[in-house]
Image: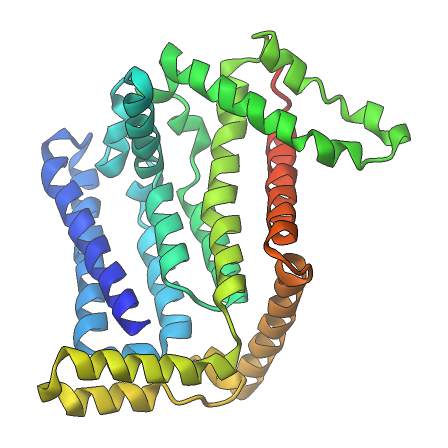
Length: 334
């Protein structure tokens, strides 16, 4: 698991350095260039810290990694267009299936959702920490108004694709709507599927509903569900310890002293140890209690039903509810 954290940190730093170098001359302002360079330097510092100070990082990873990710995403350029990765959105869409896949990847990268989702899905923390961190990052990078005004999302080809995707999501959310009592169903005014099927949905409304849904589904729901399915509680630290010792021993016998220090950092220290952070005992106790309650609630939502089929059904229901809520918050699609 430690090797995975190190790999993610290195790849993130390398990706940001590549974006900074390749997009430097296209940045809309000198301030944007400077902030992009600061972001690359920050990610490089994190990668170096995780790589060369593994025992300290692993001991404090439960608060260090979320804090580092949030501090990095506070950088204003990570919610602006015309700078950094958002420049990928300034090219029109491409035809064909391959073009659609490339455009979708450009959309995820340009809206910064790709980094948020991959980081949350690979740096596996407890469910509560994952949910809190991913929600904050999605809010920090969300800028639907400006993203929908970019060349990619305003092109007719992309608007036709987003309309078809929104139609599929609207039809998939209908079973959720059917669970609402009949007396209240009429007041919801769910005519969005009909508007989409008859090409009456406004492209701007579709974009304003689809981008928040993608952020919620890929940036929050998916990483949180993975954290729930992979998390075994504080007792799982013992397994992480044995796995890290095996990886360290196989990589280099000469680093036995460093491996011993990492293994010592992996020793389970009780329920509250996983949430240890600088501060008083009262704050740590309150944080541990809140996190434990949220962990139980998330495990109940995603894991209370046995079997892969039932869990997939629960996951679909959560996504359908997220789309229904995003489309209604966008004011409907008509």
